[in-house]
Image (cartoon, rainbow, N blue to C red; front, side, top):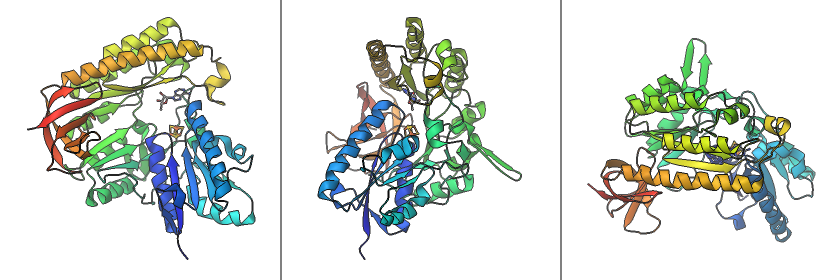
Length: 440
Ligand code: 5AD
Ligand code: SF4
């Protein structure tokens, strides 16, 4: 019998990209073959995100599309997996549009769920687990260029930030066996990958205990960095309350741990940080930034910011803007607050900032960040960076693009090198998004 073809659309974060690779591996073992062409698919899955309402609205739009598509292809199976599956469960099955619903800890049961569809009923598994880390699954890589691989090091989150749905959709925090992480990193390196990104909701609380052995995040970073100096190590996401001196010192010791920390601040106002249950203050955050910059002056710091959280005053907003200037962020992801059902904020604080004010504040934040990003890039003019080539630049086939250690995208004329090569370049011009370079 011919293999069934599996098509997966991925929404949301890098963690979801990594989970999609785990799903391909699990179903691959059961004879389901990956396709990138929906027209060929026997099974269509959407790996979904619930972080903001607009992320969910996009998926509802896709569900309607799949429903229409199924009218012409009645044998196709449609499944919703990931955070939205976890959050909405059997609500997704109403209207007979979806056949399978599986939450983030239920992917090993997908082969059974598919088999049980023969009963004629939709299948759901949204059980969360305290242990599942998919440690022993070798993901099927879905990246385009074979240069950079995601490796999930932990799952879930225990922080309970008041605005955030993740603890409810991904369950409690659990760390993956470090030896399986190192094995996976070695394996991708030997397959030709040059960069790994270690993923977790809060990597700084990574902790593995086994008998006498305790491995924290700094130890893990060291273990992965020591695989080979030609393997670059990145990670995401840090939590300002937990990022330790030991982690910062470990980064500084290894040149192949990239000079970039994604350190989501969310707000510059202590009143908002308290209400968000972030458990740090503006002062604490700025101290962490100082520590990073004192050991690694060339380390880029990027962030996430939420505009218009419950009760945010004009002064709170100004505090965010002036904190952004004080840190001088190199890049930021910026959002309007979106109330998520069931979260602490939804239960305790009215979503009382009008859409107009949220939009205006967000626009001010974006405008400031564009200026800060440009200034950050201008500071790099004349510097020499080692770029890991990702492939031809989008605009010009005679140019290559790739990232510097600090995560900035560099483009430069070059027809000799290829994806996976390291090339030294000098920055000669820039925009707010890109460094324009020449080979040295
Ligand atoms: N509304 C808006 N942004 C949110 N984020 C998380 N939850 C919400 C929400 N309810 C943002 C945070 C987080 C990033 C991944 O998404 O900034 O760091
Ligand atoms: Fe990722 Fe959070 Fe979206 Fe889930 S809700 S997919 S954890 S960003």
